Length: 159
View 1 (cartoon, one colour):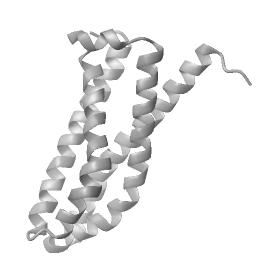
View 2 (cartoon, rainbow, N blue to C red):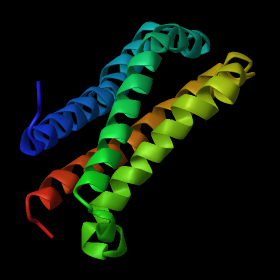
View 3 (cartoon, helix red, strand yellow):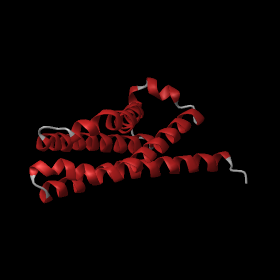
View 4 (cartoon, rainbow, N blue to C red):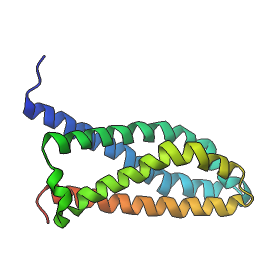
């Protein structure tokens, strides 16, 4: 079966959007549903441990979708020869997409597995660590949503 260049681009775009939806949707779920549920359902000293037990199930989904989003995004930029957009301020959302992707990739593949989980498990003040995690999740979700909105608007002609 041969895939035409137009269909190839459509399939890669679809994979890219689906991966971003799953990835950022997961961040939104954790931030707006899971963390508040843990806050309401657990005493302060147990919130961090409860969150870490549940969050582990999302880590692989996040890693896979971040990899798909990154690979498909790179492929689209390369295939469509969009490299020059990175030199133009009006394509700020291209820079933002790469930056958000890089932050999440670094968190998911380096910081969390090598340092963060052990540090959180040994936290002397778990309630404070849980609060810091909530703030970080809200910050990352906000930046991610601004980037998604900018990318959709920018890719459809808004400058």
